[in-house]
Length: 167
Ligand SMILES: [Zn+2]
Image (cartoon, rainbow, N blue to C red; front, top):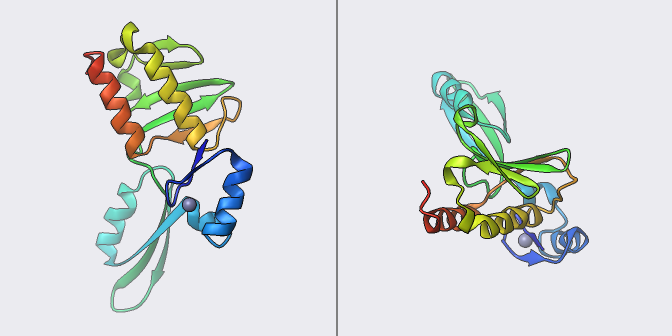
């Protein structure tokens, strides 16, 4: 199943997702995957904002006179937290949940997860959720890249972690 970035509809696979984008979103894949926000700011405000932008975000800046700038900020939709994602590389996935430099890792099937959240009794549910995230994003374990968790994924993750009595 692939989950649409714009409307959360789930479809069977990427081919059907393309068809969904064509029929429900006028065929504009970029609009479905990214959202754009426009802001008018002073130079100082703009600088602060640009410094705070994380990964998966890009911005264009245009002077409009009067010391003001127009920023167009484009971000990937349905990224609940830019620090929480599965990084897939070389047919392995690792779940990042912020502060990776302080993390120890636990192997879990094709994945590794932070040791601090892992308990053997939640292994199966946790692994299933990781597969779900990759599927929802239209990915696969042999398609390298970052797969961000959306709000529902994070709620599910927290539920599983609580069940394990982890952090
Ligand atoms: Zn949609």
